[in-house]
Image (tube, rainbow, N blue to C red):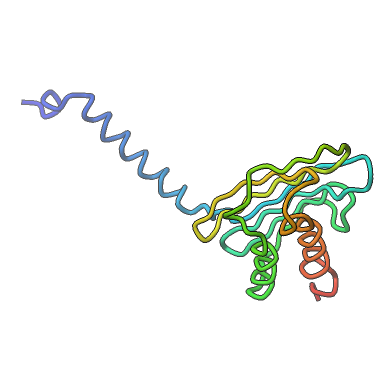
Length: 157
């Protein structure tokens, strides 16, 4: 008897499907997790507009859009010291106890969108002109550190 007559076609398709799932799952496990991000929006004045992402492999991606010393997209592998210093700034906020949204009634303010995913805490926080002191100047502090300590010409020599 022919072996293929005994094996139903759906069994063969199931094996092919499982094999294809296994290979794509392996590729996804290679993706490095984003542990922090910050993006800011514009205002009518000279508000800095940028996106910043920090990954678990100590990689920093910065995209300066408006009113930043660094324009365009830049990527850098941080040293241990740079990573530790930047994460100390980020972790000065009490992420576990922050609310998801802080909003002021004032107009023409930039919006800051934070995402923190580290030490068992996953938090997204939107700030529009209000919020606790721990995040009130966080965007400016991070931007200054990135421009002066990571991407400045003095640190790249």
